[in-house]
Length: 486
Image: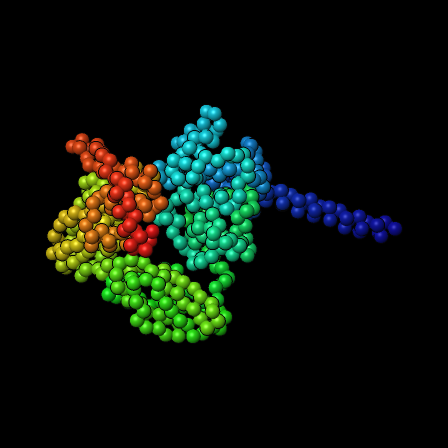
């Protein structure tokens, strides 16, 4: 009898010992693994509601580490809580300040904590006006609009070819902001890539978007299903006067017999094939090109026609290749001197193409659009100075000082590049040029009329006078209209 019972007891004892051993291993592993988790996301150690192995952990860690968001209490991040309008405006102001100044030095308000952030957001055109109910939950659409307004184009470069948002109409007040964030890989939507703009946004959803804004390595690729039966391969094209550009189209419905049309005098159609159209640039400006297939499906793209470039190579290409180097000396908001040195052993001819601009090292200063053509030729080892006209680009930012450091950049397209071409070929007073650049950014005369012309005293201080009149503003608006970009 004992021989029958002892083996069973022995087996039960072995199972108990094995279970205890497994439990000991698990506890030991957790003890050993816990410091690794804490080391991986050190900012999250105090939040009991944040699971460090979940998808949102790196995003929450990023926003907390950068001081953009904090927990709702000492031990809770509030992962499922809604973001209020006050919080969204504060986040937008902090991101703007962090990008342009490098720190969030905005103090909390004396009356209500968010008042200083709200005032900063209005002043810097992150929001258009003071809202009434700051304690209400914010929608995903408005949140995207606030975040998008906090950053310039160069900080949200497009990495995705996204032509539409699946669940948003183009006349939505948030459409352009959401589209911009999709293209930048900041917003990705749900599994169907729908953004659901009217839904309330949770704190972890907000953290994911913010983190991708802060860290470009976190941005994601987005590929959307096609909604157009026929479409151009790009939304915009560029061509110089006297030269040609070919635009290709695709169709996913089997439509054929494509017909093309151009709605302006800026370009003419010179030829078509089964799937493409070729146009020649005629005059400076912009026009629309339309394709229609045999089933009545149609699509449209935009063509920008620029002035023909002079002989030589773009100056920035020579800088990139190391053939020349360039230093910038700001004389006033109307003028800059570029010192160009040929470091190569060959003679080089260069020019500054439309869209060249001066980028400030201090991001609180305005970028400067180059409004006149700069060109020259350099022997090996030779240095020349060229003077170019300039105009401020970013209305809400500070005017440069004579001691401000700037570097030469290229890459501006669309309206600003056209204006640079126009002012190269047409003599206009500085007041008109400056007004035109800011009108393109949506600046009204009430704002634009306070614009100033700046020169620098020997001490380096800006000395300014009012220069823009209603006549100047109207003339500038007329130039934009003549270019087809009013």
